[in-house]
Amino acid sequence: MLGPPELRDEAEARRLAGIGAICLTRQQLAEKFGIDREGAILGHGNIALDPRKLTAGLLLKSLERKARFYAPVEATMIEDSAEAVVVATRDGPTITARHVVLATGYELVDIVPATAHRIISTWAIATRPQPRKLWPDAAFIWEASEPYLYMRTTVDGRVICGGEDEDFIDEARRDALIADKSTRIAEKLGLIVPHLDTRPDFAWTGSFGTTTTGLPYIGAIPRHPRIHAVMGYGGNGITFSQVASEIVPASINGLDDMDARLFAFNR
Image (tube, rainbow, N blue to C red; front, side, top):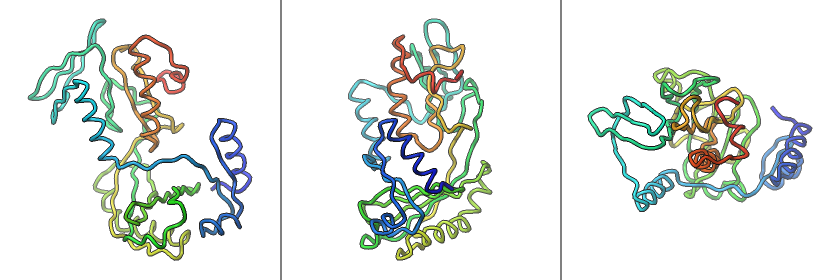
């Protein structure tokens, strides 16, 4: 867990990187958000998105730009040459393109290097709607503890809280832990926001990919310059997708991106 000195160092590092950050004392944190902790970092400029609406909007925009969709199909083979990439599908079309971008989440295609790749199981709950009990400004909250805990609000006044990650991928074992993990998450949420009804209205679990550094892998696959991968590891997919939207087009067009080496497979 990060204490006040570490939080001050983190806030200073953010400011030096051009990211606004303010350190809150225990008193300020209690007065503004009703949270009893030694301190916190307050940032600004975050946004909340409905993932279904965002995805639908991106797909519709792609259709407007003459994209073609093949779904549901399973890619069974990817072969590349100096001129093109061919993707064969099971019971579907064979797709030929000058470049292919793989965005398959934590499910790696064989051609993608698995260096530093790990699968993490995670759990979350959503409380009943209680808009009058929410903290100010619907702030996103991340507790820098081990295991971490995150909290956010919804438009109908619920609190979504999650964490309790464990380093395994077995789906049956993961799903069997929903009840126990939900109880633990609700208890932790109650310690931070005591006036909230933390009983889960919904509870769920899932898996995501991560690396030892927490950084994603973005860019052309080694020895396959026409095949690009966007592996947005670490639970920061939307942020890393924005980064990928700059790096991958630059790579396809033979241009240099100053950040590409930070996320390259051979970094």
